[in-house]
Image (cartoon, rainbow, N blue to C red):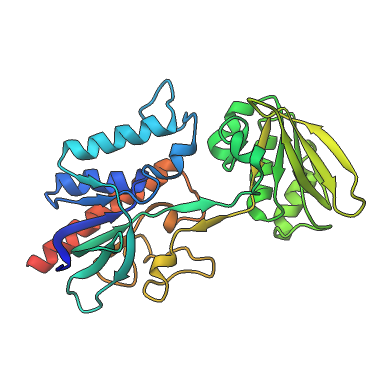
Length: 315
């Protein structure tokens, strides 16, 4: 059987806010974009129950519905949205077509590629954590902290991200308890000092999560002391996991420039990667903001840059 090969102008890998926004702009520019959704259509937002901070939703919305809205908008302008995922990439360094393998069986030859594969939050791996995800369990304080205003919450983590999440939540919540597995924090000294100076943050060292308590919503956390084995319970309504994110960039190793943790590196004030015609948008290249609205903004940038790149090729 001969291999199926398709040639397209603009291939978008990933279907979160960055991917769908790129698709909206690319379709309106007559680039006939094709979006391959990946194994999780809609990305991380499909795990988010309530979204109150994305412009255009005065009453708020829920993550899955928002992603359906973005998909429909992209399709209205002619975007071809397909369920499937990239399994192999061969990016061209001489300006010729980029070769992308889809589902291990089909080859796409693309003039431009926009990578919006996002990042995946790291979790503790507890059954209760998965069951209560979206019902008190979150991996983003900026996204969900508002819902816990005037309440008590717990943050798990010891690095800069955990310290930032804790200090952010401390402005909204009456009490923030940080659970740190070791006898010290990994966060920078500046962030540690900020935590220490915040009166309503309590840090519990040598402590790890034994179980998240609650049937339909978070009601508390059972904590185990690593040194003594003693267990105790903390009452809370929110449980924030801040142990980091893993960018979904393994597919691009040894081809695209990335930092030590795997985030794709783009040129200053641009979504352009080190390979011409290949752009990166959203959480795959953003380890600072990680918001739907910033991802959407970079998706817009990627589409505009792809359009300009093709215009320059055509002369």
